[in-house]
Structure formats: structure tokens, C-alpha cells
Length: 285
Image (cartoon, rainbow, N blue to C red):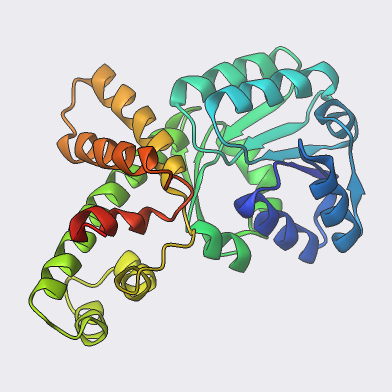
């Protein structure tokens, strides 16, 4: 199978490199062509000048782009030239409705679609240790699993098209709550005059330990907020979660609070910082 990759941001580059390492990657496309050219040279694969050109050659097309509008733009472009029997796999975080619309467009071209958002951050993308949440036909997933296993540690089929994105929304809501709890607790600890490095070490090993505390606790208490997961992107994801919650008549007050906090930080020009920048509000720094 010829595998093409569209979208070479921090997550996409990591996934593409792992596909190439496994001998699975045929070619890449990125809106900024110089980035695609550089990575193609590094990985010794083809760089395509358009999604249409890539789709005409690939049997499996993976995407990782920023927003619903970007996904639909790419899907419409791919649909112009996609080969019957091809599989398009979207690892972006978008709404379930967008996934369902994309699947409908591609089905008309006799191509399959899987919504397959991932969790694990930039580190997971680099290390090939991502968790992938998949919606779509289970038999199609089985066909492309050898490709996906090159960049993931866990692949879970959640159900029909859109189920992967619904599961990712659960993940993003949970991340918001964890961010609120960890940043608030560490700001409280610092106000008590504690040695925060020791606090983080001991709590990480106990019942309250979690990935975010382990990987972001010490940097945030040192005033370092390098992404990571950009705050503006999590804000975008949480807006999707709010819309889905509204449709399901479910209250998500932690999500609402986090959206408001992120808006405040974005207004200060901090949207490109890691989500741990929420600590700035808790400590007023």
C-alpha cells in the first residue's frame, strides 16, 4: 500500500517520521510547501504539490490538520482524484458531524473514511506511543492497522463514523479538568512556601499522580510554558466539546470555565503556549 500524509505540524511530522521508519510512507503534502520538501528530503519520500496529486497516487491517506474547515477543505480536494478502494484516515480533532460529512463525500467516490483522533501529545507523536480512537468500519480498520501501528501504542475501535471524535471529546474535557486541578493545586502549594520540586516528585508517585503533573508540573512552576499542546488548539477543541454537550443536553461546567480562562490568556497573546500556561492565571504571573 502506498501511504500519503497530509499536514506536517508538530504532530504530523512525528507521525510521518514513524511511518517512514517503518517503511510505510510514500509521500507527503503540506500547505507550506517548503516544509513538505524538507521532510521529504529527510525521509527520502515524495513531496506533492497538492492534495489532489497525493490522492491520485496513494492507497491510504492520513491527515492531521487544525480545524473542521481544514479537514473539509482537504477532503473535498482529495475527493477530486481519490482512487476507489482507498482509505482516508483523519487524525485531527474535529466534530463528529464533520467526520460523518467527510465519510459521506468519500463514499460517493467509493473510498472509505476513518475518524481516528489521537492522544499523547507531541511526545507521543515523536515516540510512536499515541493512543488512537477510531470511528468507522471495523473491517476497514483491520486493513490499515499495519500502517497505524507504526505510530501508535494503542488502537481502539469505538464504533461507527464519528465515534472516534466523540471519544476524543471525552479526552479533551478530561484534560481540561486535570489542567484546572493540577495548576490550582501547585499554585496553592507554592503559596505555602513548599519546595515544589519535592512536592511534584512525591505526589507523582501517589494516588493523585498523573501524566500532566509528571510531564508539565516542574516546567510550569519554573515559568516555562513551551508547547506541548498549544493552548489555542485545546481552546478550539473545547469549543467543539461545548457544542456537542449542548446538543446532548449535558452540563460541562469545568469545560466552560476552562474555555473562559483560555480566552483570557489568548487575549494576552499566549495562545501558542502550552496548556500548562493556565498556571499563569492561578499564580497571577
